[in-house]
Length: 103
Image (cartoon, rainbow, N blue to C red; front, side):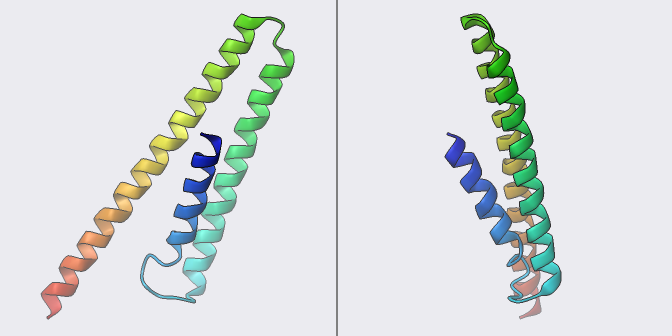
């Protein structure tokens, strides 16, 4: 599950710089790099929070709460990624519509 979330961040981050179809565009590269680093930092922060929770857990119920916390963080991140994919799809469809109008 963790791998899936991480791979989706990487996939979306790498795709961000080819959004406009301009390969080698420095601005898109910097945007993708920035988004990727931001996602990695967020993931690291979440993992550190969960690690701290697990380390301080003294019984099974405390450990269960840590798992709930981790699950809610992952769900939140997945929701954000889903929204980003939706926005990207809408931009792509809008671009396709404007391209066909030009012909």
